[in-house]
Length: 82
Image 1 (cartoon, rainbow, N blue to C red):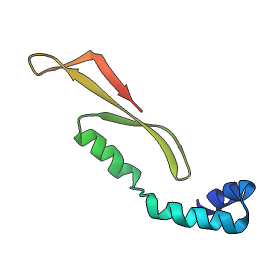
Image 2 (cartoon, rainbow, N blue to C red; image 1 turned 90 degrees about the vertical axis):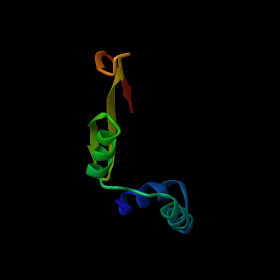
Image 3 (cartoon, helix red, strand yellow; image 1 turned 90 degrees about the horizontal axis):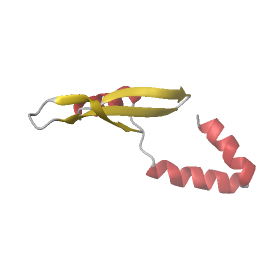
């Protein structure tokens, strides 16, 4: 994955600039295993799904049913999150 990111960055920046940006971004980015993220969403009451995945990137969506006044859920009143 680093090579692909490095290749993209080198199209817009010099090699030295690219290396500097990637080094700086590496300190800010925190990645967790996809299964952990899906588990956390499920623990929060969402029904998670992976909509798209390629290499180290994924688009995840979660569906959470609205609570009815009696504490049950309504399948017709779902909130989609991306």
